[in-house]
Amino acid sequence: MFAPMEPRLNETDRAILREILDNGRATTTLIAGVVDVSRPYVSDRITRMREHGFLTEVAPNLYDITEKGSDALDN
Image (spheres, rainbow, N blue to C red):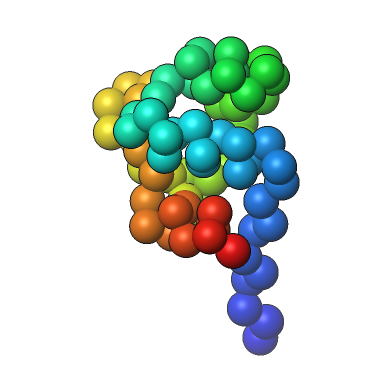
């Protein structure tokens, strides 16, 4: 049996993670404005990164980076 592959982060994913890391916590609306992509696109990317453990939701529409997310930025 093959182990599932770790998802690859694209540049927008990394920009989202950096924004959350730099600002402590951030909403999708704030991130979309800073990263210059649509809010629905940010929401989709955040959902994917949450599913893979890079982010955690601390309140409705408010996210924080996990240790795994921080480590992904270092690589």
